[in-house]
Length: 414
Image (cartoon, rainbow, N blue to C red; front, side):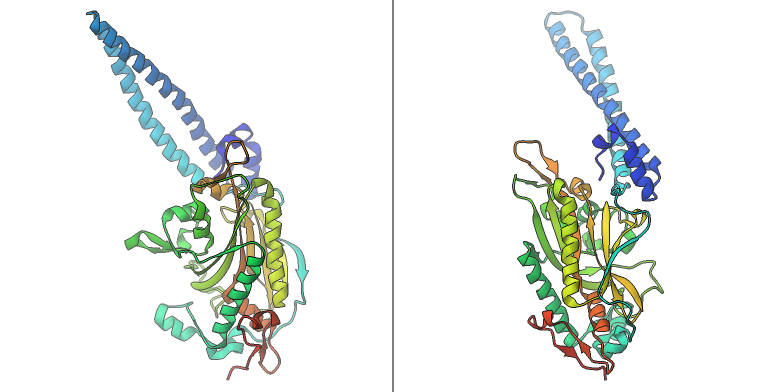
């Protein structure tokens, strides 16, 4: 959620930042107009209450002295009627202002480009070969998944199970060494958690809902991790807080029919390790680069060729001010595809969730939050399998994972 107090002093930079995202500045003007009227109503309401209190005292004094109090009584009645009108207007203004604010995305950072910008490429891209389904055969059973749960669900079998568990254990160990606390969060969340992270109102069509319990299946552990400290105030020196959340994630992928529906690249259920951090606002730019460096370290250790893309302002999610994507080279598709990403959401989520910190003796401030994918298991398996393939169909897996239970290789599909 945006800080209208700061924006109202100089709204033009905010208007320009929204325009870069493709958002009509009039939406901000609507929120500012409602905020201005609200600020006008509040002192009028306070003055009415002061007048009513004074008139009430005067009525008592007049009645005790036996004097006529009819004028004072009329004044109280008039003030009470006007107070009721202003109370109703204030409630309406606050409801409409909240709705207008909720509809506004975060302001794009000036360094978010007008179009996607490739920053660097690492590793040897360009190889072509068989895709993961051809290489893995019945180790990925899409047909059984479809019979049991519908399209875009799968059974992973045999060495792929060991590979997944090794990936998760290896990444969690790496992140622990870097100061992240491992967390297994709930995958069912309330509406407030989705609103707090900016997924509502924005991506309703992508979210699975459990209506009987008024709960939602989280599409990323970013959602429950962000709410871990909702309503809290961190003491001075308690930041940064860094978490590594492992969870199963659920996405409806509405509107993606016919696109990436082959295999396990775009499925409704997948496992992921997500980094999430709460930091001092002055440190969030450096923290964003830190998350990016960790993601690159992971891909380099796994031997996956990739490129780093600074995402265009108009393609940012609602909560992000800036986002990097890491796109892996997939020989089965002959192109780079998104594997991980990391976003700086500044104070947008923290305002919605009211997560603050107290810097010394100063007034509290909202923290900044950031998120980044350490490993999206399904897509990482695709990248490992397709880049590790040999001419005879054998798949060689990275040395880094073998100490965590992954096989050295997967034999050719029978």
